[in-house]
Image (cartoon, rainbow, N blue to C red; front, side):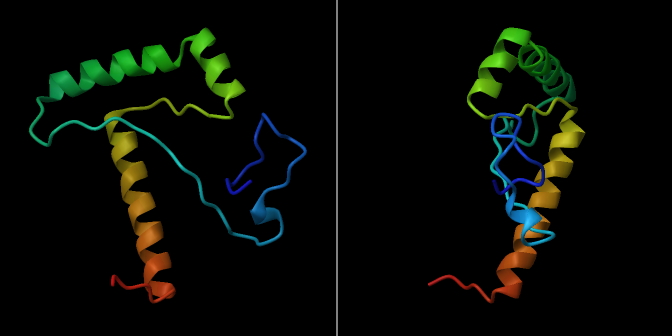
Length: 100
């Protein structure tokens, strides 16, 4: 497991971070909208998506697939994108990874 915490689906499988402290890498999915989408549309989408993800039946199905849902605001999602971008930017620089 490359996530920071053990998976609820596989609680006996240790994380990489248990052997290499500080290691954490996880995939995530989210929905984005064009930059100039009106705030009220973003808020409506956020509310409806959070309601759907909060549905017990969907939550159970996603958990069965090993997924974890994170409910939150559009600002929360923006913060996630920013922090992930910064983390991987630092990894790329530290490893001296270049294109080409």
